[in-house]
Structure formats: structure tokens, C-alpha cells
Image 1: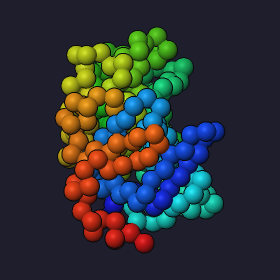
Image 2: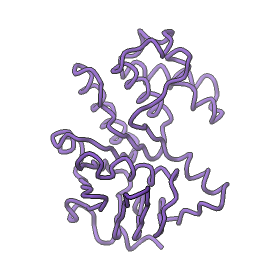
Image 3: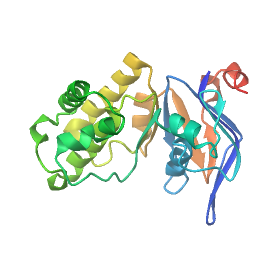
Length: 232
């Protein structure tokens, strides 16, 4: 079964239109989205996050049609997705509390919050900053904290918009390795955008290219034809 199916989806913003034919994203895979500036990479992640309602077509999530008018069902689907935006905002609190924030909203038990936050801070080399106010961090440190806040949610799907942009060079491999390990260990579906063709090739066998708003599976042979046929 696919994590997503976008059936003739269109989403319009002013003079820009993002469109798909019939695109399926495999559950448990890492999908790299590439394309030139302004082609629609971030727009695609907005649609996949279920935050933006398409102007036309139908989005399926885990085989179920997304009903944007059914608030309860929509919220349940949304909570299965974690989204790191391209320009993340950190709250005016310390690093530890920023990372734990989403877990508190989900009413995760306190002991589990401590365990999960400490683990992600250790993996992303953030332990020395735990009590630092997030607004005092450098750009690269801010990006790692924002990524930690996303990954700690342990969502079924993670959408990562330029997730290593601004990260200090010595930590890029650390970040990429952790993302790969989450996918391998937990079967997390990951969709990330990147300007780097080498990063796309390094992390993903499921490339997606966007050209002038048109979403294309770069190598359709990577997605079995039966994958889409299982959806409604």
C-alpha cells in the first residue's frame, strides 16, 4: 500500500499551479524531491502535510481519501505526519523544552518524553545546548533543534524541507545517518526536498522531480504498478 496517492491533484497559489497526474509514494520509503528554485518542492510538502487543500483532484493517505471537511478524521491523519518547514521557528524557551513541546501536546507520559528528548539530543549532538534559550543559537544549531523537534515525534510520515540547509558541515553526515536509521529501524516514510543531487542519490532510491509545478516520478520503475491499484 502507498503512503500517499495524489490523483490528478492541483493546488493553485496566485499564478502558480502545482499539479500531478497519478503519483504514488511508497510507504516506508525515502523519497527525495528535487527541482529548481520556485518549481514547487515546498508546495508539494504543504499538500502532503494535509495543511493545504487541493484546488482539484483527490489526496489519499494510507489508502484513505482525505476529507478536509471532516475535522476529526483530518486531525487524526495530520497527527500521523511530522513536518519540518524550510524556515522553522523556535519558541522563546530552552532547547530541551522546544524539542519536548510537541510530545506534551500529544499527552505523552513525562518519563517517555524525557527518554525520547534525551535520545534525539544525543544523536544530533545537542546535549550541550539543552538549557540554552533557543533564540541564542546559531543558524545551524537552530536547524538541528528544529529537526530534533520533528524527529522526536516518531511520526509514521516525516516531511523534511531542506533539512540540512544551514547545518554546519561537520554535522550533516550525523543528521543524514540518523534519518536513514529511523527509516530502517521503524519503517518511517520520509519525503525530503533538496537542491543537492548528490544528497538525493545518497539517501533515496525513490526520486521525484518537479518541473514548473508538474510532479514527476523520476524513475517509475522504482514504484511497482500494483502499488497504486490497491488504493480506492
